Each structure stands twice: as structure tokens, then as C-alpha cells.
Image (tube, rainbow, N blue to C red; front, top):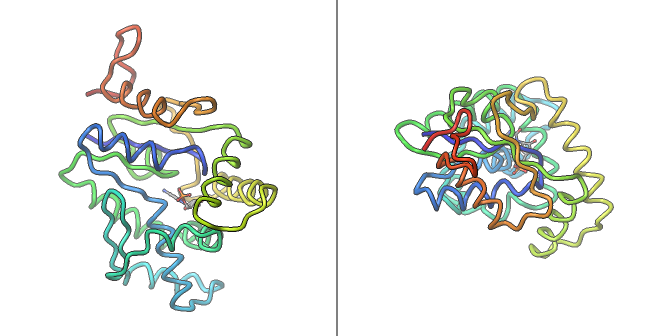
Length: 226
Ligand code: C5P
């Protein structure tokens, strides 16, 4: 079974999707981490960001292992290194690159072969797994998302200005929405959850309830089954 969780930056997708996968005993795939790893590899190898072919060559050559909570690139643990503000900004080069996207989509589909997964990103329901059994769109208000991102960066020891976090988030939202190939979009058959005012546990409870097909009125949600 494939469960897709798409939505904008800061909606709380990663932690909710990871927890959900644990509860269900499914594998977890963080596709944002894949785009981030490509950007990190590009930065470390000194690619010319103006030449998209250099970055796609880096993506194809890269060895990447994703476990539930670790990202290992070419044998090195880069779990923390891919989350800095600098790499977050550079990641747009990977996300905007069609050849990189095609390549990562192939890797995502291979990862899903023969497994139950919870996969999290922007285009999982619309492009990568249009036939997924359960599609969720997780979002939150702009201010709430920026506030969470700010606290997240602080906790990682980065010096950040809240206004700057909001400004960068707006730019990222806009680029994610306008991207021609694989842009952020809610699939027509996705179930939307707005996470403002919900604790992380409440979000996971809601997701689990949806995936297990148990709604308060007892009716199975459209497109989702246990
Ligand atoms: O989810 P996360 O913030 O880690 O994603 C980093 C960036 O990767 C996003 O801003 C988005 O531009 C890109 N991305 C994407 N498609 C995905 C997942 C992430 O374009 N499936």
C-alpha cells in the first residue's frame, strides 16, 4: 500500500509521515531529503549552478541510502548537513531541474517496489504515485509554518531572523507552486488536513485514522483503505 503525504514547507509533513510509518509498520520515504542531498552533493563538488547538466550528472552518480531517520550519501551520514538554511536555498536548483526530477522519481518508484510505504513530498500524489491507495495533503497557515521552521532552525543551532524565515518561505512556496514539472499541487482525490492548532500527536492520530479507514461516522474515506 502507498500512502502519499504532500504539502508546503513547514506543514509538519516529515515528522508526521515518519511517525505514521512507524505506527503502521510501513517504510518511510522523505523525498525532500533526496532533493536536498543532490544540492549538497552539487555544492561539495563545486558544480556550476548555471549549468543544469552538471547537477543532473551529480544526481545520477550519487549513492543514496535513506532509512527511517538517516540520510547517507556516498557512504557519509548527511542527515544534519542537508537541513541548513544554505542547503535549503540551494535545493531549488535540484527541484527545478527536470533531469534531476526524472531521475529521483525513478529512485522513488524503485524504493516503493514490493513495500508498504508512507512517502512525503510535493508531487507524490500527482506525479510519482498517481495510483496511491491513500493520498493526503497536509498544510497549515503561512505564519504557523514559518513559526515552526524558525523554532526548528533555532533548535539546530542556526542564527535566524523570523522575518527572514518568512520571506524565504514565501519565495520557496511561490517557486514550488509555479514549477512546471512536479510543482506543489493538491491532487483532486487527496484528503486535506490543516494542522494549525493541532499537536504533532493529534496530526498523526488523524492520519492513522484516515489510513485505517475509520472515520467518526464510520464511512471509509474516499481513496483510502486499510
Ligand atoms: O520537504 P523539504 O522542505 O525537505 O523539501 C526541500 C525542497 O525540495 C522543497 O522546497 C521543494 O522545492 C523540493 N521538493 C520537491 N519535490 C518533492 C520534495 C521536495 O520539489 N517531492
